[in-house]
Picture 1 (cartoon, rainbow, N blue to C red):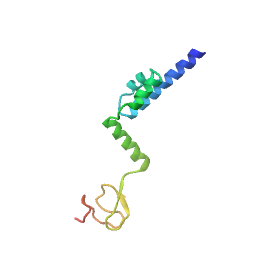
Picture 2: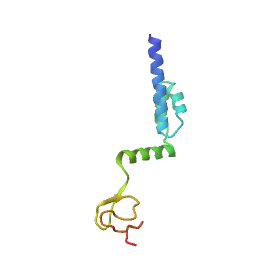
Picture 3: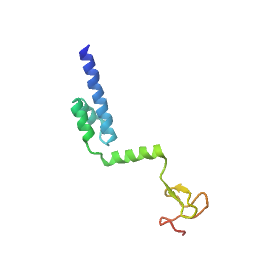
Length: 101
């Protein structure tokens, strides 16, 4: 019975390690390998630096959770989606510098 509990906990460390390193942009198999080393491997997985693809994934998750980035219209002050060419409220034409073209 104790062996079964140890195996279940060991497997959970493996799954947690895979999830942690996948969120940091690494292949999940490396996290599973680290997680199977127990709490020390999970600690190493937590301390790994985030890769560029991991940062992009986190930024995408943030945008999905909080909506697209918005900016204020220079004419009416209402929020428009970042990168819009015109304000949907006052039809002000927005250029990349924020001035009328």
